Image (cartoon, rainbow, N blue to C red; front, side, top):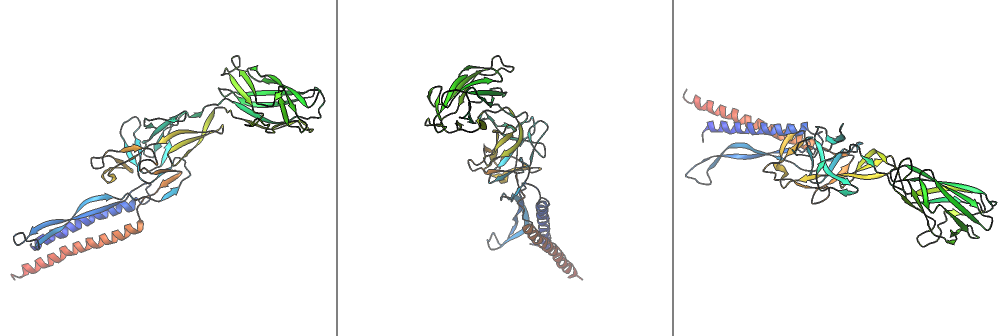
Length: 414
């Protein structure tokens, strides 16, 4: 092997180390890029010459070459974020995004998402996050764009109520006391059920009459409640204390709604009074009201669970499941094509994506209000840079030294 070949060996070292420096520079430049995964150069030797009739002890190399670039998929550090739609993946997997209105698919670890003007959950580069819709609490099997436009909480009609009401046992006959009960019908309209109690002359007994602010009562509008000598409820409508049912009809109401069967909760599960309706010798008063209805609500805020469920918080105090984020994983993530802006696309080397939901089938968990930082270790990157610099300088010195040797060879003829 001639000295001229040694020059080319040195050049191969310069070429490989300069490319390695490009990779190190890319890592350092992206040390603050959310979800970025660093790369490492992979070198291979160049086989050049075999001397002495193929003897294995006389094989000479011709330098080095950059065989490839290996993506490092180590987990990045997790940082808290105040934005509910900033998401981090703790474990394996990628978010799935696509261009709005297109069927392309991109895969990313960058979880910086926002709502756009259409109500779609969008990445900072404009792609739409994919997931599965919840409809009436049932998750869809079809992956689609996550769309939060026009989301609202469906109203819920009241089915029961209990009122903390104290009726004065010392009241004179015909004394009255009103308990207003706020309810909601099937369209979310507020209905006030005014229950008027009238003291009966004999014993500690009161008659009641209920009138709603909308609609009419078709059953259970009147009756009596009787208290024992300790002021506790003993009889309802002349019989052993039990819950009472009102039936409300809204066909002729300002806003028609479904008929409502409303349970007045007066006793516990074993038929014993729970002490909410009492008849003590004290001033009549209303001290509490519990009912299970609510009006429609508009979206106030969002939260994301570790299972990738996007939950909406509404101004009627309710929370509802809206979507579940989709995730993908690959047999060989190192084979993915880099598409810029922290996006990847599948390739023949990566294999096809396995699509699922967080925390299943080897996929990682989702961390809401969090971001996965770059996994580049800046200290390690600088150490690698120094080592690469030294290797580059050594390759350059190999060329200059070989040049000196060639000069000496030329001077032999002088």
